[in-house]
Length: 532
Ligand code: PEP
Ligand code: MG
Image (cartoon, rainbow, N blue to C red; front, side, top):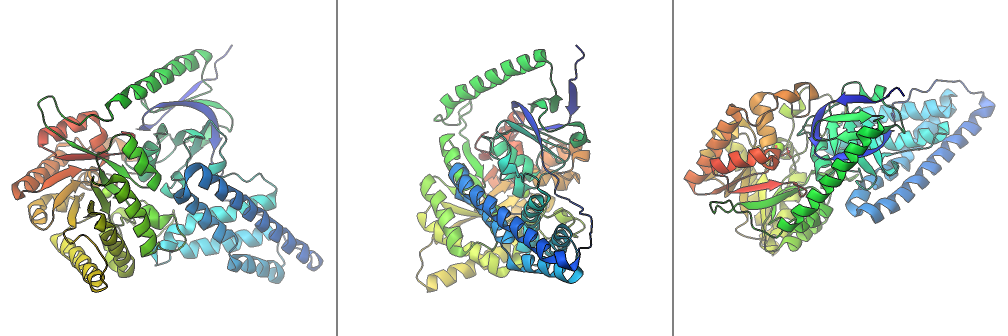
């Protein structure tokens, strides 16, 4: 028999093997034909629109319950956002008015209004709305699918054992991947340290990115093997190939289980050097996984999703609840909370900032949104009353920026003190070294903070001028490049000369060879995804 097997090659971004059925992410970019409706049929079109909205709302309510049950409430927040958009009176009313005044078909009216609203949102100044545009689009797409009579499908409805194939996947959607359903992930775009890749690793979903033209070469339901080690997808594998991969999968699972023996061991080298081994997390659910996998603290709590998962900015109390839950869980082990690092690759396609990684990101964006930043600093301070919380600033590129951030922290302390609210007076402040400027000025920065943490993902990107999320230049993204290593060494030496400790929370710390280099350079702490 002729073999139909095809091998597609890309970049290995999340280790492991998976086999399953292709699930091509539905493409929501509909172009609906414009039809003029007779005045007598206008009421019927409005009715069709209302029915589709009601059906989409029912789906999302059910989905919300299921996600809360299966994945936890912080993931369900993403569904609440979509639910709010679908039931948004403004969107519905504008579409109805379009049908009545322009006597056009419901699909055309709704999709036109939706595109206008998404476009306005994508360019909106309040960062929150800009970030929410894809959710509006997804929510609206569900309504359109109902009108078209299609079975609405979102990532959450991927059948069990799916291998998700898509052109690209923004981090806000990657957050929704349920590893119990999605066995593997294949993308045409993206690099090893894109946030989507980081999420795939955190969820332990084997993934290969940067497979050119892939979505045109696979079809829903085809059998596929994801080889997250070699960076390839085998479509319609032969029986022989499948058998060999099944053996690999069994061996891989056995190996993972065997590692669990080491969970309670200290991280000590053969020559007696003790390393602090902490975890990077983004969601509350991951904090527990980190504990179970033996983390001795949280070295990086990425807080962006507290913001991105909601329709409105999280209140100080909401942030405080999450932070103090993690602090309590880890008490007395340290929890390092990084302030919002919004921007960069967390922008909607089509957003007009010409170069988002060099633009409005991290501290810069926080300085321009003082209320948002103040709420976060106060929440962190209040959580620090547990005694084990530390704060860390991202994307620092000058001593002045660190001073400004510290000043705002001091103001938040004064406000809390005036109200008699408890916090840790000696809250330790750390600086992420992830721009070449910060590494070059590490000695000065070290004099103004309690610890440094190397963000090797961004440090590599900015030092080598290689976009961390761009598959075309993925081969050039190399944290082992001597220029990057030189900056890491300089940072470690600067911390030690100043008498403070230095860690690393970038992905380099999860590479076996990377760890050896870092140990040689004298790193004190490494922080990696719970699965690593
Ligand atoms: C880094 O840049 O290495 C880092 C840890 O931060 P993030 O990946 O969240 O940008
Ligand atoms: Mg970074």
